Length: 217
Image (cartoon, rainbow, N blue to C red; front, top):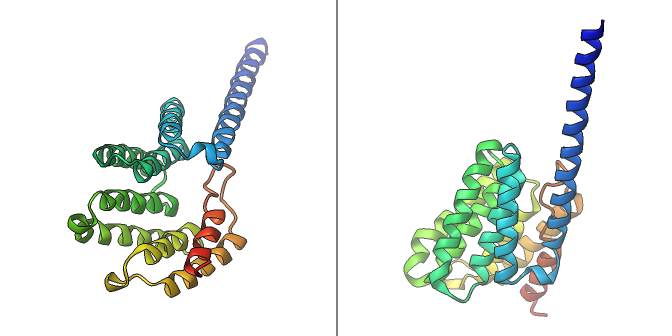
């Protein structure tokens, strides 16, 4: 009986420690995800800092896809924002490395596929004239893949609308088509419920701002 009681205490202690660690992980992640929604986060320096933080969290946890996802998100946003074209491919490479790790834990994930599309878009923007034929189809295919994994994901339609808005008409862009796609994205945002508290929620406010541009406001 004594041995059973000691074993029970050990199991209970391990369970409590695991629960405490899990709660701490969610608290840290929630705080840093919320900070990504602030304007202060959208600078190359801030994104570099956040990417490194999420990568440290991911390496410590080892079993959660979300930290690698947010690290990739930060790296690709940095790549899209930076004015130094020489930095873009390195940031895109790091984002892809993060996505590979995230996908190992969560295959066929619509959110991960959306970030893959943004990575291709960042590479394209280095030199649209020479890279467009290579990376344009990759970006579009990643969004179609994201849609096949989850057709209710609003970020799919946000990114498709963004592509339509900023692509010249002679290459398939259209403000009218972008407007329709942004309106669909907002309908999806209104109905969307993330699977978990740490899953992506970003994009609704940005969709509204792009819709105004598509409408000529």
